[in-house]
Length: 375
Ligand SMILES: [Zn+2]
Ligand SMILES: [Zn+2]
Image 1: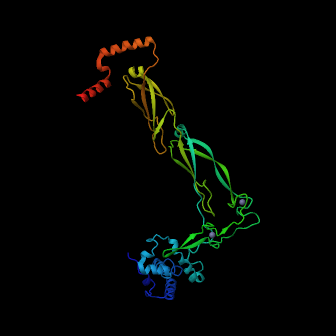
Image 2 (image 1 turned 90 degrees about the horizontal axis):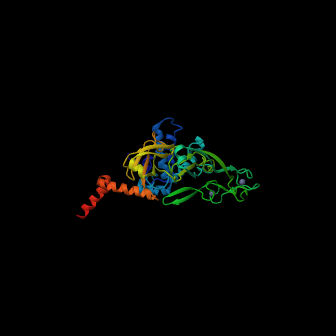
């Protein structure tokens, strides 16, 4: 839907004088003002259009931009300039209606310093894999700010007072020209307070608050993973000028485990097994995060074989079932043999030789591959 030309909205000629524009605006704004047309959507819409047209055409810079580029030159949605650049309207509006409708204009100029959200804090916490798997309750010490008792939070040395900021003359805002637009910005010297403290309080150095520490109870939920964060609402830095506090984020780091490696909700462990167990098979005992478990190694188990123990992993924060434990077995070569053991093995070796390649399935297939490679 194409928007109407601003001159048409105000029913004035393209070369209308500032005075004509103001008169036309005053007439139409009175006609469509919401206070005179309660619950009338149509006049509300017209009122907004009139307001917008006047906002542009009453400002010589914006009017020039509009004449040259059309709405693209002035539309806050189409240009990079922020909507703050158009704050001139509320002033003009206040001038005209202030006396008739009282506080008409609604979103009028801001009074008092700007409120800011306090900064978020990050707390890095190292926990063990067991603590991550089973949950963990602990206490941490975090910074806390309390009002300064020496200066009663004013930040000024007792007996002195904050003074008006010389940069913004107490407005908290400064106007800056940027291209076609005049942009209102928060004063950088006083951060919007409008005042500064010539003689800061010696106790809080002008902050009006003193940093202390407080103890927080933290409950780490079972199943938490490395790098996850827990938010503690409102326990960050305090808000400025009445703004809300920031939040505290506890960031979890899981220490490497001596036995297990975690992969999501699954656990992996390397486990040496005796040469004879690998050959003959047998029951072996494995550690899990919930105590010991056992499983059967079948006869003829090769090294690096992986066994999966269902449900012996970690139950993740959002999963309904726990993960699995993967046991990677390593067949251990016996060392430091006695002469008798060597003899037994030599006899054993001889019997294997007599049995042929069927005792060594891996070697057989390997030598077959090497052979075909050289042919
Ligand atoms: Zn200032
Ligand atoms: Zn103080």
